[in-house]
Structure formats: structure tokens, C-alpha cells
Length: 426
Image 1 (cartoon, rainbow, N blue to C red):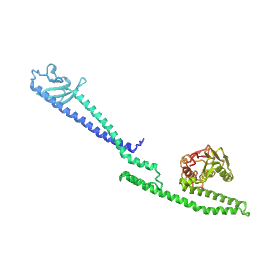
Image 2: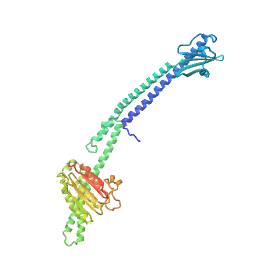
Image 3: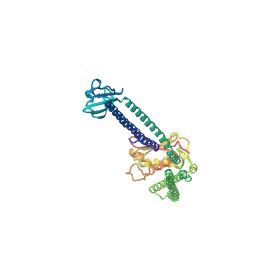
Image 4: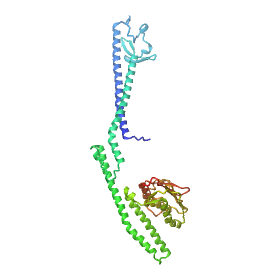
């Protein structure tokens, strides 16, 4: 499993590991050095004591005794000086011997074929080593704790400009044209370069958003004139009594498409004007008024397809919403339900602060549900009509207005779209 740490935590960990490596190596070096030096000193001391014993007394009449913490043996010795069997195999030189749960340092000499052994209790030596090891361990722990503390202070110092830059990017809308640049607030170091990169990227984003807003506004504005021509032409044609029933139905279909396109153009034009003052000046309408208008508009095409249109008015609140956006959201969901439903029903249910559109259509596969609100994603690719922009537009409008839209499947088939308007109006 991969563990994800923040940059500050990584600095602290790196500082602590480096300090642990240095302090640990230093402590082990001290312990090993002291151990080797003490063994050399003890070896030299035992060798000197053994030589003094051999010079001071004769083997035939031994009377000199070793130090209180020492034991002296030699081959063919009498009484306490007799060489024990467990020491007879030792070669000349310095050794470490364990006898009866006690440890000794031993020095062995062979003179004229006779083996001499001098033992010295190493309890004091072991106690000094334990104290030394404890001191080294405590020093290592203290050094590690100090390293963590210093690493924490260092991480705060190092990360302070980065955290400040992140807060500025997060809490100030840098995509606004009046937003000040970030780079002048920082030194010419790595963080300053990051701020310069942020300014450059945000500048390109501002330009791209401006171009998109201008393009959407210009296209929407220019489409109004031909749409008005089409709409007026349809009205004139419908006033002609010479039209037969089939031609009249086609003209009515063109007129309805023009009306839908005009609403869509108006929606895009308003989305291009995302400033608060423009949104406040938009016309307002209640939820039930938009629902009744769309029900009357969509009843004929829905029923002509052999579907049942169900409308449950409920008891919606009297709150008024942006007329263009609410009309576009509800209309696109009804159009989407009509497009993907071949038999059964389409139901529009009004709630206190929202509405639900349900259908008995083909439904949406589980793997596609998350992506349905993205542009150019369609529920059933076998259907030839549509570019997959309707739900994307619904999602964009809801984000713009602070509304929320959710999608779930119905049993045994079909979709349920729920739009919550309680965060609006703004």
C-alpha cells in the first residue's frame, strides 16, 4: 500500500533519517572504539601482570599471589595453582573465558614447555560497557528527537512561501482580469519561479476564457437574426389557408425547433455573461409556471410517440428562479427522456425546492453514469440524433446557479434525474 505524505512530512522524515544515520554511526563507532581500546589495555595489563609473577617467584616454591580479582594457574602447580582442564587447550595470547556463569579475560604464556594462565574478572569491564551503551543509546534517542524537532522547524520555514502561494491561489479568484499577479510577492528563487509559472498559466486561462465567452456571446447574438426570420416565416406560413394538414404539421415542427433553438441561444448568451450583475437582472419565474409551460410544449411530441406524459404538480415553493436557466434545465431533461424512451411513460414531479424527471427508457449503464454530464457523452451510441451536449449544458447551468443535479436508474429500466434548487436564488 502506498503512503502519501505531505512535502513538510517528507522533509521531517528525511531530516530524521539523515540524523539517525549519522548519530547511529557515530554511537556505534564510539562503542566499538572504546571496546577495542579497553581490550587492548586489559590485554597489555594482564600480560604485564603475568610477566611480573613469573619474574618474582620461582616455580618450585611459589609464594607470590596475584591481585584479588585475578586467578593464576600453571602446569603441574600445587594446590590452588593447579591448571584446570578447561584452560589447558588455550593457545598463548589473550582470550575471553566463561566459567560458572562468569566471564574472565585470560592471558596465556608457555615457558620451557610449562603453560601459565592468568585470569581477571571482567565484571567491571562489562559494567562499563553497559553504561557506555546506555549513554550512547540515550544520546541517539535525544539526537533523533532533536532532529525531528529541527526538521519540523525547518519544514515550516521552507514550506511557508509554498503554503502562502497555495492560499493565494485558493482564496483569490486569479482568473478574474483584475486579480494581481503573484510573482512580485516572492523572491527570485524556486518558489518565485513557481509563482511566475502560475501567473503565466492563469494568464493563458484568462485569455482562453475570454475568447470562449466572446465566441459564445457573438455566436449566440448573431444567431438571433436568422432565428427570428425563421420564426416569422413559420407564422406567415401557418396563416396560409392553402396549406394541407401534412405541410402544416411540418411547419409547426420547424416553428417548435426554432423556439427551442432560440431558448438554447438565450441560455448560451446568459452563460457567457457570468457576472453577478447580469444574473441579477435576468427575468425570474416560479417552478410551477415553467413546468406548466413545458408540459404544454412537450405533450404533443411525447404522446405522438405513443408515450404517456405524467405530471405531478405537488406543492412547490413560490420562490422565483432564473427563467432562462430553469427553462433550459427542465426542457433538456424532458427532451433527453423523450429521446431515450420508446415505450412506457415520462413523469415530471415538482417538489418543494426542485423537481424530478423520470422515464421508462433504455436507462444508462453503470459504467457510464459518472460521465453522462460530460460533453459529447451519450447514453446509447446506437441512436443517431444528438451530440451528447444536453446533460452537459444542464450540469453547467446547475453549477452556475448553485443548483445540483443527480442521476439514478429506475427498476426495471429507465432513469431518474433529480434537480435540487434550494441553494438558489442568488
